[in-house]
Image (tube, rainbow, N blue to C red):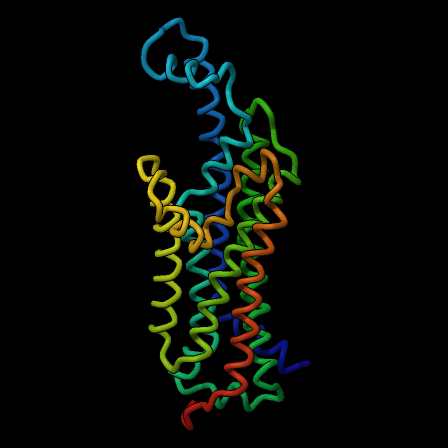
Length: 278
């Protein structure tokens, strides 16, 4: 048990500043998006109340918008922002790639495993710290939004649970990214390859999802397949706060991908031969 705690402390010491800065960034983004939502509501109401029959006001009326959209729906549209995805992905890829490959590359794996802890125990400390970090980052976004709601006027202030649901979905997204990066790290001896694999898979999935959502491509026969291969299809914060029907399904899909990859990483790491200088 002492070796387990010691290794967790080691992981915290190695990446504490990255976690703190990432959490601070998400806290600020959560607050900022509430501020932008508040200003957006004012602009929408002004346009809808305008007697001008041209421009965006007329377009909004033609779309059947007689009132401003729900405050939470506007806010959740910003939770799809690439800055949020990027911050979470950086943490997941960094921790996944450093779990095994970085220690082998540095030649310190022998020293780490010389402590009274098994290979599975060592990898468990990595997974535990990474998952707790993902939860803390999602919580920082929620806290930032909650503070923003307190200091900015919204037509319909969201409840705590309405913010927690998309945060769960975001955490599960990070878990899936961490999972396949960790699996690549468990197979490799240098850190740059699992980092590259995690980055390419994440960026490729995001691009595939964005392309599949372009209106002019909706009738293309290949569009549904492009959408299905992306993990980002299972991250939909707007839908979660409107109907909430996909919460269990989306979280299960993303968490299942992450859990399966983590389990395979344990199997690979326990069976692989480590270099003599590792």
